[in-house]
Length: 311
Image (tube, rainbow, N blue to C red; front, side):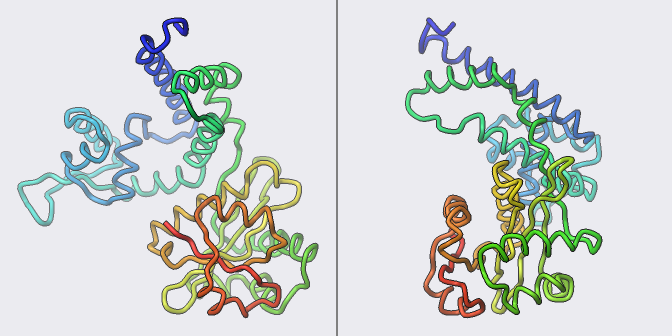
């Protein structure tokens, strides 16, 4: 088929899509969730944009209304989606996530979806130029390692803070901080009393777990005055810094702050010596900001870089 060049483009893209969808079905089956691959775009759209009519959903997803109606009906049957009258127009039927649907999405966001996203990025990394060459390269990569195998190989998942695992927040951060800098009083306060100084003040702490290796990374969102949120105390164990745990964790946190409405005032404080971390921050949307440095930089003696997230 490759010898047919552009004449076979549609057939090759269709074959790629079928292979990816077949693996997606297996991945969803292994997750233990009732959600099927065909319902994923609908569920994700309702999670991101809130209640919507079938027409609006079809426009958002770029698919036909009958296809959207079928997917919605299936999601309603398994209890993930509810259908009811729109508040602003009783003639319109509106779809929304049920409590069970929101719980399902929350579980998928912490485990399967980030793994699938990471596998898809790996599959398409470095592609550019002619579409046929890219299709050929993707076919080659999938032959070497299927999407299912890529997702299975990524055992990373997100954990939320509990007192039982709080010591990892301290230990992981102390590992990299003590190796590079002098531990400051603010470090001690946050790391030794995370519930009192972060959680009880409206902040959040997350961990990234890597299969049998256990918890390998962590970070916190510390709430500040005037609606600002500081991304702080982000660290990954030295033994896990080549497996993408840091980027996996940061991408999850950025999406979580978007949902909470915190991302427009999200900032971080760092140091020029953290070269790898700074590259990651810049890659995912942070830019150096003089106003943030002036307002918050004095909190740490070591701080010579202040960054703010930009959409």
